[in-house]
Amino acid sequence: MQQAVEERINEKEIVCVVCPNSCRLTVWEDKLGEVHVSGNKCPRGVVYGKSEYTHPVRMLITTMRVEGGVLPVIPVRSEKPIPKELLLKAIKVVNEHYCQAPVKMGQILLRDILGTGVNVIASRDLMQDENKKIAFSIYDEMSPEEIVQQTLVEDLFDKKQNLTFEEKEKLERIKKHLVERLSPHFNKM
Ligand code: SF4
Image (cartoon, rainbow, N blue to C red):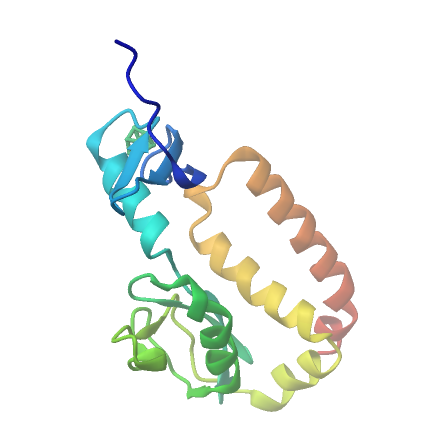
């Protein structure tokens, strides 16, 4: 006897990001509301697929403004992933905040973002500025994108050993651009 074809409700394709295998998962609900996963090579994919299907979460990665630091912004991240639907709102909240230099990597800069119970922490150290006027005169000449880019480049260079060849090349190109762009200011110092 032929078996009835199972009805798949709201079927989605999700890439598992738990390990570098990047399995393509298919996730769906049955008529009883139970969630099913296929395409996984290991049980962790089932857990990830169900969680991503029912309640997707993302790490918050952005920058926060700093008062009295050697740089005007610092890269920050959430301690744990937060609900995906709150991500943009949370980034806005973080971007509107200031923290005070010096800052230590891992320091909590914002507690319980949007009532999620998750803290926002610094992704790097940031020293207090001993020569604030000179530093800020340079940043005054930069666009906000360049300031953020410079901060991120410095942060990435700290972790350069973990980067792929392409990432390192891209980083070198951005750094070269920033050095060319800022060299007239550094020469004045
Ligand atoms: S299903 Fe398992 S093997 Fe596949 S990407 Fe996820 S964790 Fe890796």
